[in-house]
Length: 313
Image (cartoon, rainbow, N blue to C red):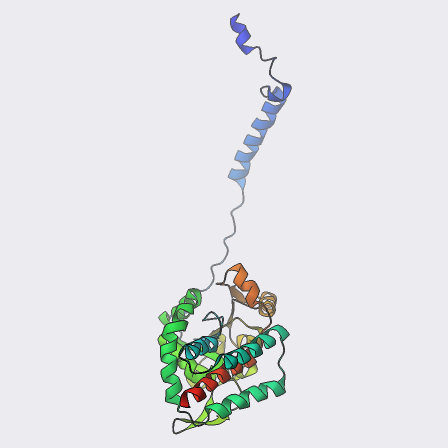
């Protein structure tokens, strides 16, 4: 075979032939244009770095965290009820009744004031005459059994960042203040704002001090504590999963939506609030069902109260 035959490529299909003079020219022109554009490109504007937050040494700042589904997966009082049931403090029919109340209001997404009053009054009448120390003692044990492993690590890290900056960190929840105080202490937080049941001499009287700490009441609690502590609310941060807490979130200069329900997620995006979601997609979809947090907490409190009544008998 003549040596020139090695370069006879006529047998290759047309689409596989070596580049033509026109394609070579196109390629070289593209390479040259790329070199010029890289050399002549204007400097990229640097995005301003976000200010350091939380600000170390800002004694006028504090952080306020909702509890259920913000700091802890699920409802604290539901886990408390599990512990009581395990100890045979009440019957299945009691647990089923209160669980149904919570499910109904989560699906309905609305709160019936008369029904809320019935649940509240029932719970308060049952705990009347019991000692606060009794509830605290039970809560300490149940925290270790059911609650400690359900704290969201991401939210816990946010709280720790505030503590490391020298700021106070408070839980703000519709759960009884005794339960909230146990959880705050175990997490190393400053303290807790919660629903206060009246007690005299360490014994429950069967009355609430005001109303459950829910919705606007949380904002009022934060406002009152800030005034007492000499805090600047514009320096403070608040964290919640629920649209019910928009009044509290709107009160501070640094609101965060944590594991937000659908209404809070929408509101947070409209307002430019920061969002953090520590759930899987499947869990996030489930938790997105509208929830009546106030009634849920009261129903859980009633379950706990029934348990205490069974134990006394």
